[in-house]
Length: 280
Image (cartoon, rainbow, N blue to C red; front, side, top):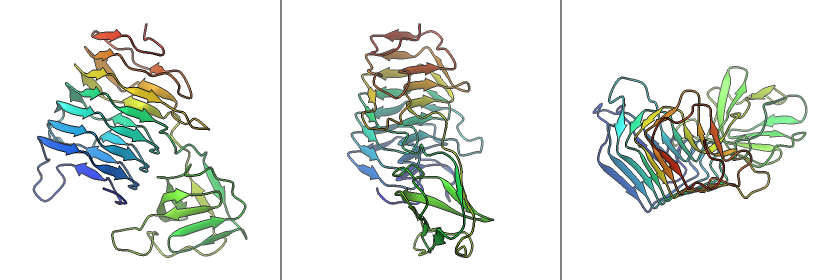
C-alpha cells in the first residue's frame, strides 16, 4: 500500500454506502510513502486489528485513529495495533485523535518518527523556480524530508510536499493520474512561497482523545537517528485522557526529550515496569 495521495489504508463512513468498515484485519503489509497517513481509521465502531505491518515513510502519522466529522460511532472499541514496525513517518508513530475504549497497543517497534521537523520558511526572487511537480530554491538549506507532508502556498495556489532535499521540494499530484501538483496554474519564476511550521511536539505514541481501559504493553519507542526528531515515547495531550489503562513493560527511553509527557495525568489503572520516566 504505497504512494497513495491520502492514506495507504483508510476506513471511514464517508464513502458511497455511508457505512464504515468493521471487524477488519490488516496484516503483513508494507504501508510506505503515502502522502498523508499510513493507516487512517475513523467513524468505525470497531473492532479492527492492525498486526505485523511495516508502516514507514508516510507524510503524516504512521497509524492514525482519526476524526473525520459526522456523528457516526463517536467511540471506537477493541482496536488492536500489534507487532508493527512503525518508523520514519513525518508525524507521530501512533496518534489517537478519536475516543477509543479497550484499545490494545502491544509489542510495536516505534522509532525515528516526527521527521517533519523543519521550521517555517519563505522565499522568493531569482533563486526560486517552479515546475509542474517541483519547487527549487537554490538558496535553501532544507533538512532531508523535513517539510514532507506540509502544504506549500504560493499566493492562493497550494500543493502538498511529498519529499524534499536541500534545495528541491517534490510535490504530490493534485489528484490521481494528474501530472500537475498545483491547485491552480504553475507559479511564475521568482514568486514568493510559504511553508508552515512543523508540529511543536512529535511523539512515538500520542493520545489526544479520551482513551478508556487501554492496554499499552511491551512497546519499544525510541529515536536513534541524528538529529533526533521523535520528542517523547508517550504523550498524553491536554485534550487527551487515559482512564483505567494498563501501561506496562514498555521501553520509552532514548527520545529527543523526556520519555513520557503528561499534559493530562492518567486516572486509575496500572503503570508498571516502564523504562524511562514514570508518571509518578
